[in-house]
Length: 584
Image 1 (cartoon, rainbow, N blue to C red):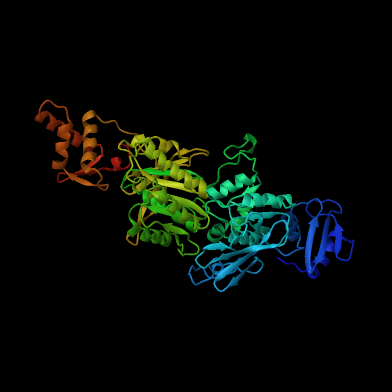
Image 2: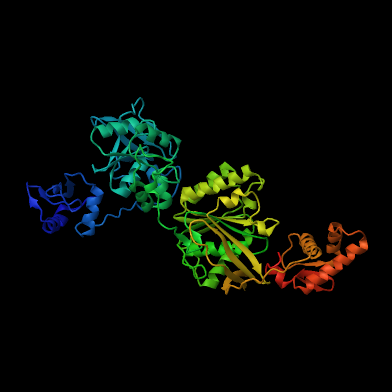
């Protein structure tokens, strides 16, 4: 970025009290480090340049001058060129790169980058980049110790593998970059630049070759998170993501998997739904079938994507990726009903809510890589929902430790890669008191676990049974309200459950066989006496058919009297006490 000396120098000189020491230079105290007579400004062909002899960072000095109103704030933007990838469109247009100041020109549809020696600056050859992205160098050109500087010298030099990556890092950060041709030549070339006095930071790709280059160079480095290279990061997440990624360099001597105890963050956990759903966490929503798990998950997803509070709890807005195992046809209707009920407008720009086209086998590495690629293209993803575990488990055995371990690892990989919360919608086991279905490693891996249970015929309750690093939230109760032929949740006052009434052995057997007879039918369901009786008689240990039938008659009459079952014309359904969970 060129800054006019005549426009900005007089104010800087007057404000900082700089003294002229030569025709083109003024010296004085540094606005950043405070050192006396270390700071100077100069007129360089009409542009203002500034420096500190203590070698404090150019970016820090610039920031101080910007905050004091002495320099214009630097907010570089990549050119607003069309996002298209056609073979007849030059490479730089496809990449939305303006060629000025990049060391490249366009010859027809081919981008031509001039390559020079590091030591002498002499012309070494060219790189030719075709419209289809294929690249070649001048025949016989030696690549080691050569490349292209992009931008004027600054206090830091980022050395990149690719030309487009070097251009993006330069334009977004304002720092000089160097195109080192590829990952193989980068380590030696970076060290050659360091030997010449440059403050080198390796800006490698996020792949195996890039990590090898970082290790071989043995220099401070930065690597783009999630995506493969710096252009991908800028293209998918914008300027701010690139600035954030290069803000903190990693020392080549830094431990990769360990931190000193004093470096461990002691800040309390932060939340994407205040007090309920933590940021950067693994969470689960567990409930029996037909309890409304997906309605609750969609409610949370819509709240986060739109920034609307979740039933009185503030949210942090961000992108939501919802992996939908079933019910895709009705999901738009649910989301639009939620928006209508809340008075919120869903749109493509301000509501980054995305639902998958089908289930995704989380244990399939190929599918997982495609998923990661999709998520990386959405800015600031805060929540990834997997609904349900069973539908996205790829036919594995939920009770097998290896299969469940693969699923948990895949969820953790997404959580760490995108620093997002992964919310897994899951079923209860046959024994509701035993919690989530499947191997115990699932619950053990969670930071947050929430359970849902029915209360009466129309209400559900949301209860926190695990909040690893914070206080569990108070139980919440909701009722279902119909909006445009679907349902949304409204929060209502939470009601305590009554004490569970003990059942005799026959009464408990009757309840168990009633549930077995209804299987996965929607609640409240109805079943005829003749469908229920054979299962009870088969399981009862009476001496003869008469004693078994008498026990069945007494047990079902008692269950109706207790309010656990309703009876009408020999059809039975769950009563209020049963659906409120008092005797499940």
